[in-house]
Length: 319
View 1 (cartoon, rainbow, N blue to C red):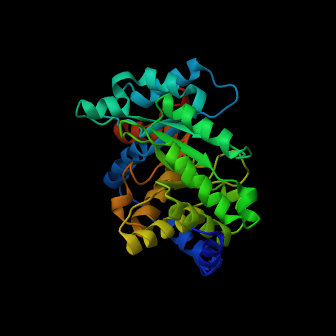
View 2: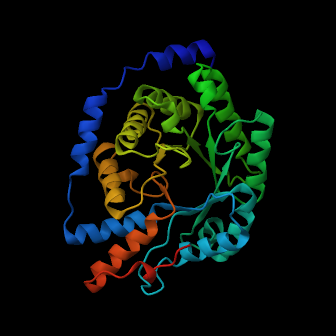
């Protein structure tokens, strides 16, 4: 697809009605759930979490601790579901794969059960400022280490400068680098970093650009800037994948990440998904929540529903 074609298409997308978008998101945020529905929603939230650690001080030990929590979120309750994935830096992907053992998604599928995927951030995360060769090498290393999913960041500078073809071709090249000889290709999540795109119009154009280039998921944020996964932004991206599905029959996932810390916020996202893209999107292959601290709050809420009283924060593990 040429730059002229992309420019004509993306700049022809109608502008976002910001007031209408924010009012709809605010309306969805007021929906309440009954006790039984809330219990089911809490379990669904856990099943959709990408449990994340993306700190410069991450160690193999910290990743193994994170994996242990992903496998057994609440040791006091064997009915507690597992998370969808653990998300780490690419150089720690092999550690996560090893720590998951039989729970690693490909091994679990082979045994006829569901498992936990390993997602690795790549392409010079979080800035995205590197040559294409360096970005592709970053992806190749993570895929070779066993990553099942790659969370890439777009070059926001290129996008904001109107170099749409450059961003499009980088996404396509990264998608190609996700391929494996055995056919177990890594899925590609494209991070837009909406806080740096600033406007809803830019976020909508970037979402369409990523989908056109072959993204399996579009993701709001790295979690490393001040503004991350607001409900209006998630709603906007869900509208894009809904419209893409109506046009092509293809389904693309959405992953809000950064700033979703409470069960209430997570459930608001579930309601927004169901009311916008449809309940079919409420599964790990089409919706994820990138989070590090959210799981603890969900576990405390589940314990309250089960026992009738709130546990202290020390009843759940920090990592």
